[in-house]
Length: 219
Image 1 (cartoon, rainbow, N blue to C red):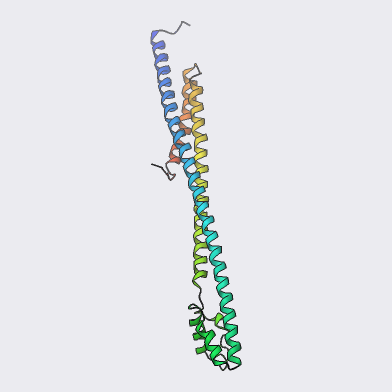
Image 2 (image 1 turned 90 degrees about the vertical axis):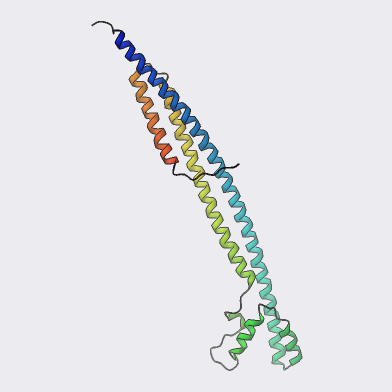
């Protein structure tokens, strides 16, 4: 068998040149994609940290509001007890004194309770605290803040997952870079193209997956 002719050499060189070009392209775009994924991972980590900070602040405020509601309930119980005691002793002036000093949130509940004639009506609520009109703004605020904290914490967990997804994308793009780099060390064109093909399949698959990710940017 004779040696390969000039035409075979030209074909070999052409294939070698195409492999070089494809490897260069893959190295360039995979490097950019890796940098972008690393940036997004860092950004989502920042979003996660900020959301957790907001959630913790909301929980602290919720606890403070709950404590305030508890203190207000204690005041209502104390003044109601004193009013009942004065009423039972037929001390009208003292009873009126306590009644006038019921908190604005408590007085409507007392009035609604008295309207049920609790001393005469069987099955009437035992105290004003069982009345639907006994509502504390601090309690509502505490529940709202707790709901806000839970929602923000959920957003933080989602941001953490997005950050992890971008980290995985970095690893996959780095693998594509590895295949592109290895291909330049191979002397057999078909082997080079095969390794490059693996790199491109990995890159394209990761890029399609990456396109489904939300992004966050800082200007």
